Amino acid sequence: MVICSLSIVPLSPAEEVIHLANGEWRPFVSEELKYGGVFSRIVSDAFALKGVRVVYHFMPWKRGEVKSREGQIDGSIGYGMFDKFKQDFYYSDTIFSGSKVFFHLKSEPFDWNTYDDLNGITMGAVIGFNFGAVFDKAEKSGQIQVTRIENLERLFKMLIKKRITVIPLTVEIGYDVMNNKLFSEEAQLITHHSKPFFNTTFHMILTKKIAKNKDMLKRFNEGLQELKDSGNYDKYVAESLRGGYIIK
Picture 1 (cartoon, rainbow, N blue to C red):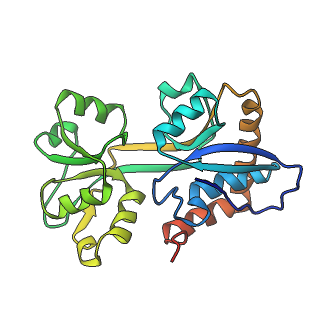
Picture 2 (cartoon, rainbow, N blue to C red):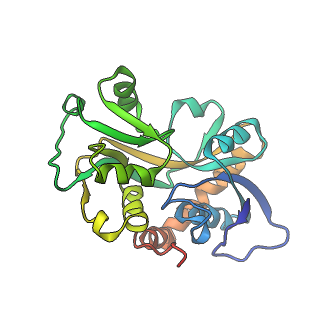
């Protein structure tokens, strides 16, 4: 399915158009959120300031990555900075900075300092979620034990039932699940450890197979800076954090 996000500036009939893959990754992007989520709104409005209209194609993330890499669409949004993408994609300036932490039950004391402290701790994570090279190496070597499933809400149910001990997750995503998918009495049982195990930045990626994208990247970065300078960027992020993009 395709949506066209709203923008903060009027667009002329002669506007340029860019096609971007998008997906489900609440609270940052979702077809079920206003504007397609805060990331979608930021990208749309940054481009709109430079006379470019964004058309979003919502699809599974892997499919969007493949279509972008092959040049079937221009790119995608919400990607971390990974070397494996740099050969095929241009990376935008930072759209958002986030921290990944461990969620756990308040009734189950949990503390950690190094990955050695995590040995024997049963973790639950979503298939395909990336938590950085150090975590990936520890998981593959067996230093940490991670149960991977497809459903994020189910992970939190498993945590409540003590079938797992911690959930590694970006702070905002964890609390979005707790506030919108769990009963309030369930959410009150859960907290997160203050020490991040990974800090990351999120970006738009544009395929190098499409010649115009080098210029599009430059225009987007300029528009993003203008959006930040105007104060609208901070406004959009604040709205998202207080649940302002949830469709009642």
